[in-house]
Amino acid sequence: MARRKFLKLLTYLLFLSLCLGEAQARIGESRSTLEGRLLKDRQAIKVSSRKLPGLIEHKSVPYRRFLEYFPESAEHMVYYKPAEGEQASTDDLDVTFPDGWMLHVVYYKGRSVFEAYRRNGAGINRYEESGLLLRTKGESFWKNVDGKDREETAMGYTMERDDGEIRANRQGNFMIFYMPEFDLAIKTQLDEENAEADELAQEKAPDSLAGF
Image (cartoon, rainbow, N blue to C red; front, top):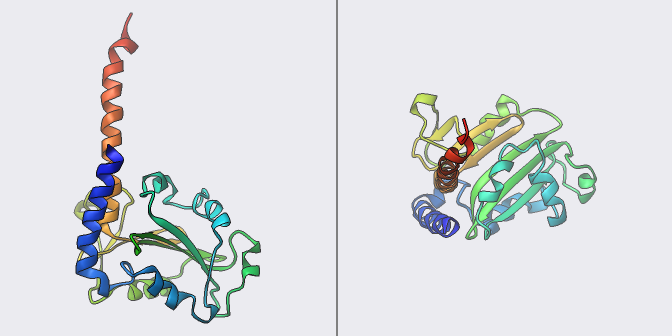
């Protein structure tokens, strides 16, 4: 029941968001548009599906604990791009984390709703961070969000576009961007799960304390 409610909520929220903001940023792009730009002239290559679990479930991936709450129909892709501008090669993927960038993308109903840029071999410097923010600002601008002004969230964020359509968070060597609607749908599912666990704990408390 919770899974069906989650999918209905996610579909509705993302439909509204994509209708309003698809043309304004790279989040919301179709897979064909994103790959047409990214894979052109072998600037980047797709990581094979057999290698995906080892990359997205690795302990260094900050969003891995939310994977089970992603909709089953979502497509999870990873792309590799060298940092120095040379052509990407499948030989580069002989190591798990080759120097350069790995872009994790979640597509839902054919559109990007979540993107995580992982920098391997070096940390993300301030110029690279600024460049990523510039590429994702659309016709809006980014602003920092203090804890007191932050809405409840599952995945967390420290920046938000002024139009409210995309949130961002820097975590270690990851720069993460996502639609708030995607985060809200995950949080809704987490809240339901936590409420059920709390109710069960309350029911079991008398038995646990019996005999004291």
